Image (cartoon, rainbow, N blue to C red; front, side):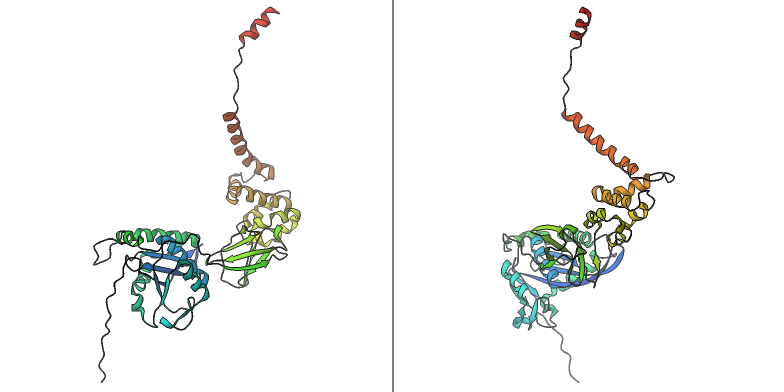
Length: 376
């Protein structure tokens, strides 16, 4: 019978600023009331064990690179070496010391001047610090399962948890993580003057429905850009659309297929010209403005009044208009003038206060006037 041989490992030690380890972890969160799977990018400094975690919808190249950039900014510097496994997001072929990095990861390493170290297959012990972190954040940061309105809110929670972790003291160490981080921060390589942009960028033409198609899904822009070419930058969790260098839309990125994401404010100018289209306008029916559509059916002006309500929701905010709806007596037939009546006093009061504060009235001596009357 073959004797089993116990595995043995050499204890590792790192100097301040020498290395950091990174990995992905998976968990779940309720985002906008829907339970969604999230992928969490993790990085840990090897000397101080300071941590950074950030949630993404996918483990794609854009998220991977963005996680690096955000981690470097959180730590305030860059380690000399980064230790990772052989995932395709970083390695195009080979493994370990024979690995060939992906082109963009190579570019990122050149920009921040760090050395890429890839582990051998199945050797989790080569990045044990980060392996422990993946299990730790699930139990301590995501239990109970978070309930948030957006992934940005979730990432703010994770960011604050990372800051609190600096007060933690690891068993067997005499200093807290934060105290050791203060030592390590001084040894980190400084951040370059320009931040690396980890986007996936393409130039696209806006179609007749004021949509641009990116990565199997379509996103709206203001209708005045129909037929024009725009620049689309895809990040891990969002899309940013530019026209001549100016940002015109920034929707949340979807990883579904053939979905359409359109915002009412992008179509309001067109609806004012074609008000009858409002009854079946997808940007209205697919968003919270659907409540305006339902309420507007009670107005005497029909489609035109609905569009005017939508314009007011763009100018004053949707919640403000819905608040007016709820404040109005249920037996009062609604009109646009009544809605404006709820809005205008606030503006008029503000204006009156402004005039009172800026205009000075000179006092008049009425005694002289009385004397002249007496003479007559």
